[in-house]
Figure 1: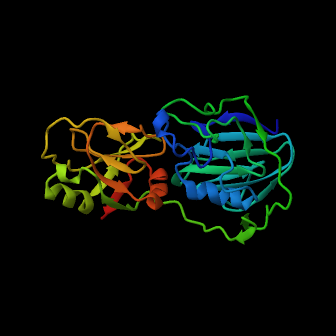
Figure 2: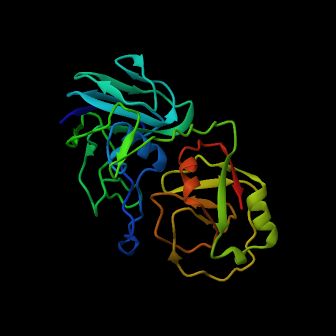
Figure 3: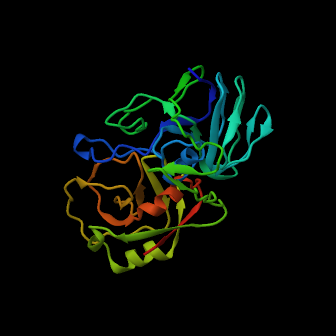
Amino acid sequence: MAIVVVNPGPLTLVEDLGRQGWASLGLSPSGALDRQSLRLANLLVGNPVGAAGLEILLGGLRLRFVTASTVAVTGAEGIVTLNGAEITLNQAIRVAPGSVLDFGVPLFGLRYYLAVQGGIDASKLLGSSSTDMLSGEGPAPLKSGEQLGIGRVSNGSSAGTGAGHLNNVAILPAIRRAPDPGRAITARVDRGPRADWFDHDSWRRLVSQDWTLSPDSNRIGARLVGRPLNQTRREELPSEGMVLGALQVPPSGLPTVFLADHPVTGGYPVIAVVRRADLDLLGQARPGQRIRFLG
C-alpha cells in the first residue's frame, strides 16, 4: 500500500469517468462530477484519462505517502500543502516517501481532484472504480487509517512534462478555472421531452431568472431555488428513463438537475436537459451560488 489516509475530510471518494450503459441494471453512470478536471489531473501525471483518482469535497483530506510518487491536483482552488509548503495546482508534483499532503477549504469551486501516477488501485464494478452514492456500489468513502494502493506505472509516462498522451499523441491539457462563487454559472439547456407540460412563461422563467443552488444538493442532483415553474398538465406521469443532466420538476415547481449518481427512472416531468459540456461547472457550484440557464 502506497498511501495512508490520515484524515478523509467531509467526503472523499474514488472516482473515474464512470460506468456508462448500465441503466437497465438500475445503475447510474456515476464517475467524477467534474470530468474535465479529472482528465486534466490524469494527463498531468501521465495516466490514461479515465484512471481512478480522488474526488475531495470541501478539502480536509490529509494523506501520507509511504512510497514516492507523482501527483497533480485540479478542480477547486484553495491552499494545498505538501509537508507544510503550498503546492502549485494544475501541475505535476513529485512526492517523496513519508510526505504529507493536506487539502484546505477551497476558495473557488467545491471539489478538488487528485491524480496519482499509476492511478488509485481500487476494485471495479462493470469496468469502473467509481463510487455511486445513490446505490452504494463501488468503493466506500475514504476513512481514517485506510490504505490505498497505486496502480503500476506504464512505460513512457509523461508525468512532469505538463502534457499527457492519448493514443500515442501528445496533448496539452486545457486548464479551466474553478467558478467564482460570487458570479453566476451559465449552463446551456435544450428542451426536454416534457417541455409541453409547462406554460410558455415557465420556459421563459427557466432561462431568464437566476436560480440559486440549494445546500440540499449532492452528487445525485443539483436542487435549485427560485420562482417556481408552472405545470399545466396534472395527470400522473408513469416513471420513465432519466438521463444525465435532466432538469426534473416536482410538484413544488423547483427543478433539480440530475448529476452523476442520479436515479435511472423518474416520475416527474423533464422540462429541459443541461448539455453535457456544462455539467462539470455544476459539479463545482457552491451552495448559494447563482445558476443561469441559456436556451
